[in-house]
Length: 205
Image (tube, rainbow, N blue to C red; front, top):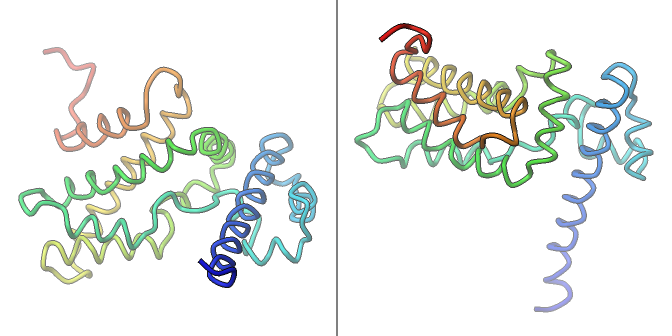
C-alpha cells in the first residue's frame, strides 16, 4: 500500500477519535454539572479542540451527548428487509435490533454514562435510537417494503414505533442494573412480552 492509499484511513480514524473525544467530554461534563451548566466551549476545551472544530462534528451540544447511532440506519433497514420471510414485521425488527444491541454492549461504559445523562435529562430521550425522525422514516420504509405496502400505510409506522419503544425500555432498564443482566437479555424479554400481548406479570395463574 502506498502512503497516498493509507492517508484516508488515517484521517478517518483521527476524525472518529476526535468525534468520540468530544462526545465523551460532553457526557462527562453534563453528568457532573447538569445539562444547562455546560457550554460548547467547555466541551471543546475538555477535548482539546476549538469550538469551531466542535461544530465540524456536531451541530449542537445535544447531538454530542447522543453521539453516533450504534448501527447505521441503512444497515438496519437492510437487515429488516432481508430477515427470513416467515417472520412477522415485528419479529424482523427484533432480529435487526440484535446488531444494535451488540454495538451498544461493545461500548458499554460510554453508553451507560450516555443513558444516565439521558435519564437525568428527559428532553434528550425522544432523540435516542429511532427517535430521530429520519431514522424512523428509513425503518418505516424498510418495514413497508418487506410487507409490500405503501409507507403511508399505518401498520409499518405502528410496528416501528412499538419496536423503538420496546428497545428504549430495555435500554433504560439496563442502566438500572447493568451488573446483573445483559442488554441482550432485557431486549429479548421486552420484545417477548409485547409479542405475548403484554401479560400482567403479577396476575394470578
